[in-house]
Image (cartoon, rainbow, N blue to C red; front, top):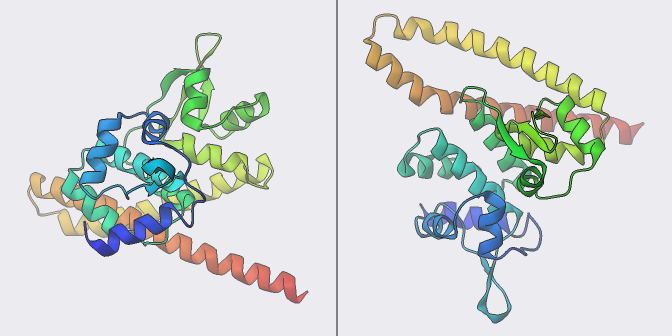
Amino acid sequence: MTTEATSGATTAATSRAGEPTLTIDELAARAGVTVRTVRFYGSKGLLPPPVIGPRRVGRYGPGHVARLALIEELQQQGMTLAAIERYLRQLPPDLTPHDLAIHRAVVASWAPDALETVSRRELERRAGRPLRAEDMERLAAMNVLIPGDGDDDVRVDAGLLRLGVQLLGAPLSQEAILAARNVLVEHSRAAAHELAQLFRGEVAERDARDVKSLSAHMHPLVVQALLTTFQRSLREELSELLTGSGAG
């Protein structure tokens, strides 16, 4: 990975994400990987180096957690390390942990829907925080989880969990969040349909292997383009809203 990309990633993982407090063991446990995996990603330049604290102990922050989760998700989608490096290099250098979590949620959407049964303790470990009864109800309403077969088990959509936990702290009512989700689903489906129609003419006369290769290349590019466009449009809309409120 280039020095510029690594430097930008380091900035996002430290100054923008708050004070790093996790040891490498705690980071690995939070992400559900081994310490060896964390060190391997670091050696490949996929994960920014830790901040060196007292006693020369490396400390990791929320940016490292979010970036590691994104890397793991990309690997689960079958991307090679070289492809993951290219993907990360194209990301803006100033992404916050929340931005990275959104990217991970989008990447997770490439895979078929799959629910994983976990214990309440494991769910809270992955969430990185205790979950109250009202938190569980709100996550269930967002389709992040559903009650499992056991008394202490739940079925969770791992791709949506981190984003759902982020929304628990949002100053929005549950009704507003669900309404926003419906808006996003409706317009995302419409955009996907229009893009599929657009590309259909391009692949109509091609060999099946060429079509599969084109799909593999275009899927992440289109998703990333949609996400970037949406983020910019939303930022402009919110800026106009805040400006209008201030003027009033």
